[in-house]
Structures are given as C-alpha cells and as structure tokens.
Image 1 (cartoon, rainbow, N blue to C red):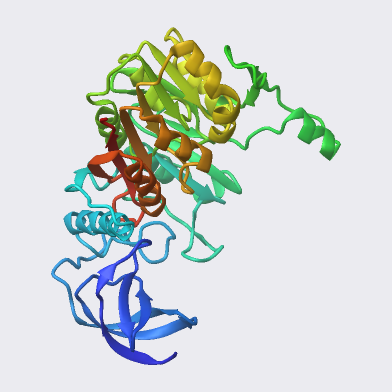
Image 2 (image 1 turned 180 degrees about the horizontal axis):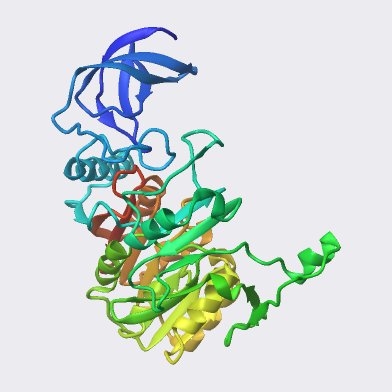
Length: 414
C-alpha cells in the first residue's frame, strides 16, 4: 500500500507510535497523539502493517505541545516531547495495561512513580562527542540536553565537541556523586590478558584485579578505576562501573527502592539479577540473609563491595545455572526463602527461574521489568500458579521517551 490517506490515530502502542487502520490494515505513525485526525503518507509497507509519516495535522489533540528541545526529531533520544508530560504518563500506563490484559490478567489500578521531567538524566552516551541522529549514524552536535542533569550540561557547555572523546563513551553526572568531581567520563574498558594475547599486543595501563570474597564460581575481574563511581542513595553509598548498567534517573530510582522494599519481611531474601546490589543494599537492613545472583562478574564485584559488612552470599551465575547447581544447597543452608526481588533483562525471566518461582510458594515476589510485554507474560505464569497480582506500578524513569518500566507485587497465600 502506498500514497496519502486521512486517518484517525486510535491509540499509542509500545515504542511510542500511534496506531491507525486503513481498510483493516494496521498503520504505525510516529509523532502522533491518540485522537488526532491526520493526513499521512505511507513510507514503508509490509504484508501485515505499514509505517507512515504525518503530512498534515487536520485535528490536533489538546495534549499536543511544542517540543522544548531544538534537536527534537533530529536526535535519536526523545520521541514524545510533542505530548504534555501528564498525558504521557497516562499513555504509558495504558500500554502496560494493554500488555497485561492481552495475557488475560485483570490489572489493579496502575500507580505511578515519577519525578521531574527535565534535567533528570544522569547518564548519557556520546558518539564522537555528540548524539546519533534518529535512525542514522550521523552525529548531532550539542552543547545542551534539556533532560540531562546540570552536571552533564556543564560538561557539554565547557568542552567543545572536537575536544570530547572519540567513538562511544558514557557520561555519568549527578549531585549525588561522592567526590568533588560530579561527572565521570568513562574510558574504554581495558582488555583482558586473554584479549591482549589474541591481538598480539601489550597492556599500556595497569589493570586492577578485583576478587569476589565469597564466590567459588570465578576468581575476579578487572576494572579501569577512572570509570568507578560512588554515589549516595537514600543515605547509603553505592559503587558501580560507569561503563556497566546503572539507572540514570536517580530521583525515580530512590522512590522505586522504597516501594520495592516496603513491607517485605522474613529471614532470607533472594535478589535475582541483582546487578551491583542496588536493591540488596537496602534489603540487608530488613533480612538476616541476602542471596545475590548475577551472571555479570563486573557488576557482582561491586555488589560484594556494596554489601560489605552485611550477611550475604553472592553467586556469579545465570539464573538458570543457579537453579540447577546452587539452589539445593541454598535451601539446605537457609531453610527457606521468604521473599524475592527480581529484575530480569528485557527478555524476561529465564524459563527455569520462572518455573521454579511458580512452584516455590514464596510468600512475596517483587518483580521489576524494563519490558511490559515480557513482564505480562511472566506475570501470567505466576498468576496461573496461584499468585495474586496485588499492585502494579509504572516506573517513569524516562520522561519524553516511550521507554516503559514497571513494578509488580505478587503475593502467595495458601
């Protein structure tokens, strides 16, 4: 199908495009707002659906606003600045609800955990000193990003693009950093000795080897100390590698930590896919024993540091391997697990992890997800196994984008 058509934007779908239909065929339209009447032009056509661009807005939504960033539509970051922020949150809620309802799950009222919608992002990625253009490898020069923190924007304004690091680098800047320097420009991760040997080269910089204290599954990892970050969240120090993953909206992260840990109780808690131990640091105040599972050894070394002095046990394994090799001994040592906090990657829970949780009858599961589709899929398995979905939250980490994270409470009562 090709040509121009008059359509009505029906609803927003995951990814931020609006859905319309032409003769029963789905058409996805970026930069539209639900309810608008639009003249569109088909730009890509497939058997079951098309992509279109807006030619004219015939009837504009009351929620359409002027984007506040001059690079909007050019930069590959934000894609919802044309919608007022309060309505954005409602749209993201509706996408979560659609995902759960498609799985046949009756949702409780979705609550929202949010913060300020500008100057919130403490982590950005630069390529050759700028941002990538939307759907392109071209670079957009910038001296300011309205959604980035004051510390990042100070760097962007003071350091010209041609003096910024080449290739891809991460910047992390925030007032919560526990040093005089409130921004870290991450350096490229140093190669392991094995990688260096394969390339026939020699290391020019000394690498520091860090060891896990309690894991028998690997001996250590390496870290470029220039990429190390320590910050304070809710009164606690948390260290991590800027090259690794860490949430970039720290205001919403602090609120999420409080909600994830609220009213949890028992003796032993499992933090599955724990990363650098952000949740475990706070779980350790509530439980006698904290069990951490994380396949990324670089992150787990930081988790060991962050949990120093707290009773815990770390496993440098995938969830699947932990279930297979370690769970029996854990249950023998601790008797039972009273609560689980789980924060899987976009693909969702590993099959063996999900199957075990469904059969475990653990009283409390708090599930954090960065993908509402896989969150709903995994939730269905838990609900079919006797768990009730008692609370569901939109975690609004990324205002003005279509990225959605969510938190679900699952309770099991016999």
